[in-house]
Image 1: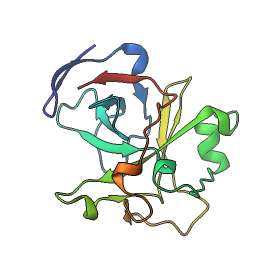
Image 2: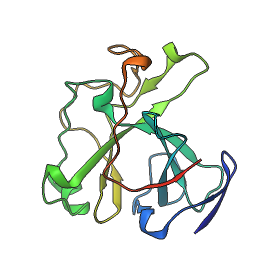
Image 3: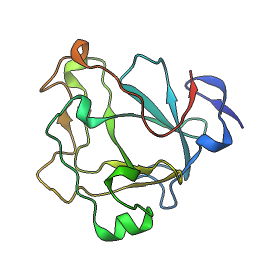
Image 4: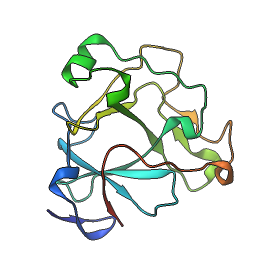
Length: 159
């Protein structure tokens, strides 16, 4: 599929890499998204709406920055995502990027959960509680210390 992104220009996204968010994402239009990597070395991805050229939000694997982060997904959310257990869930958190790295924050209270095999996603409330919507991203680790790892979800394209 061809996506005309206002952020990345024209990109090709494989059909088998499109993630369906039946309930959408909080505050964003559309329900079909793809993970876009700007480079293979980056700990950040863009969750890009495939039907909305201007909609893309940065996300990351929270454990790259917060090794003791815990997520508990409610039974209803797990059912709607058709999760068979923790092994079938990929977790990402939305990043709020700023001009200065020191001002970057991450939403640890409402992670994005993706069933990698079914390509089904949902933003949920973390039932562990106590996590901030705007947690300083670099409060525990420096960017140079972050070692990216590949998600289990297909990365749709490299911009």
